[in-house]
Length: 222
Ligand code: HEC
Ligand code: HEC
Image (cartoon, rainbow, N blue to C red):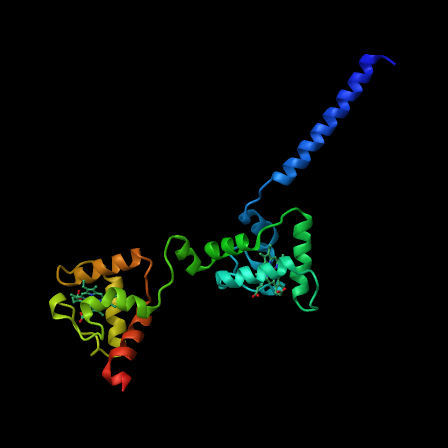
């Protein structure tokens, strides 16, 4: 046998090993984003925006809190024993995902779903959290309208605790809609509303009216 030939064969083997080694290591090292995994393997059942798909019996995920998602996904990725319920669908699915090499950490998937699809999570991802109407009133309204909505003369904030519920609703709706200034004090409120929204403290006028009315109006609380 020609020594050159042997060398060439050895080279070919080496190259083959090298190439397959690369293929293997690139498969192992490949990092797939949560977005890709979600869209490829979850969206057809849970919806492109996590809204759920009734035909697939897949519940919405866009209303779940971050810790619920982490908990459920941790269970799904950790357990393989079937409970004989609908969970079989997810567990079966989970095994197929892992076979395809699309493994993910439950916390990463939970965070992806929460911050991409859940409105509260979307705000949090921008550095905001969800505030209750009560917190918003205390933080953003009380200093001008009083902690019991009794008004504050120094700030020219009128009392809000004398309005009927529907009047409050109307006032708050028109404040929101009529951002255009009337040249008067309304400018104060228009500015305030803009600052409130910039801080992620947007509220629905009806919620705020209900809160103010039932907490501060003597006619309603008595
Ligand atoms: C074949 C359809 C199908 C696919 C694909 C699928 N799911 Fe599900 N999923 C379901 C069904 C049905 C349920 C409800 C019953 C259950 O828990 O198994 C569910 C439940 C869940 C729950 C628990 C929800 C709750 O309310 O407790 C989470 C979280 C979840 N899926 C996330 C995912 C993620 C993330 C993926 C992709 C990696 C995915 N699912 C892919 C069908 C699917
Ligand atoms: C910087 C002071 C200031 C802050 C903060 C403020 N307001 Fe006002 N608000 C005013 C002034 C002044 C008026 C009266 C003139 C006007 O309508 O702009 C007013 C008017 C109103 C009115 C209409 C009532 C009327 O008699 O005209 C409502 C309702 C109201 N504010 C609700 C709120 C709510 C809810 C918040 C918090 C989200 C808030 N305001 C925050 C100063 C303030």
